[in-house]
Image: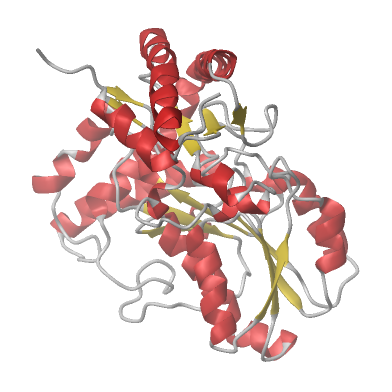
Length: 398
């Protein structure tokens, strides 16, 4: 008898959409040329790249010449943080240690990038605190800005708790300050989690740079894109050929890029399902919180992605919950997939004022297009028994 299998880890990655896969297939073996080659095979591959670049730019409301392809959001975020810090123009205008502002709940790739440039003496960094719901304050950002501030980077939606940040409002603040400041502040957002559900028009958001990743939007792994507004002085980090506006050398992942373009072009047609996902998410939250005492939702209930439910279970250890759920066919996460092997408490939950014990007892349920009512009902039905058993083992049952 086959075990029931329920996938509730869509924030970690999504399955490739079948239509996206069909669009990719010809580029594995038929249009296999190097897109930099000038013969017909190269031209066929380049057509796929150009179409994908147009699809991404159409979705973001940018020019195709403002889009470069990357291996994913991690690379894109590294390019932004480090590319600003080592930019010759930035260092000439802002001094040898330009100031960068990021939120305390950024993805680890942003936090580790700023740690690196601080360690190397390339920049100074300030962290924006968040409130108990994981949201930054516009006033706090305003107070952190200095004359030498070169970059503000705030993620659009958090990968662990799904909290949505006021990116358009921050963009408006930066735009307003740039009308009076002698030195321009550049604004970046990591939109990897947001792109499936939120307005990512770069003009509406007021951003200079924006990162996305294909595998979060039912596209392939190992490919993403970075929007760079014309005139943004970003230094290249990978030397070699002149690919991608001379900012990222190397043979292009044509098949993956085609998949990214296809996936992003299909987001709007699937947007009608977002309300259904939200209803299922709410059903999951309500079912769990009403049936399990001392359980609590982490993050703002209103300003969060429609597919995210991050819940703490007092007296039960998150890793143990994950293992027991997996034994019953349910796949979830204890937080960011990138931190799955890290036993330290979530920096996101700690920044929100949650204790180490609370952070260690958290589980992230993230739903997607294929999630069903039956799956939600199944998870809600098995959770009380799992938590009761673990609390009994830990001696915290009451």
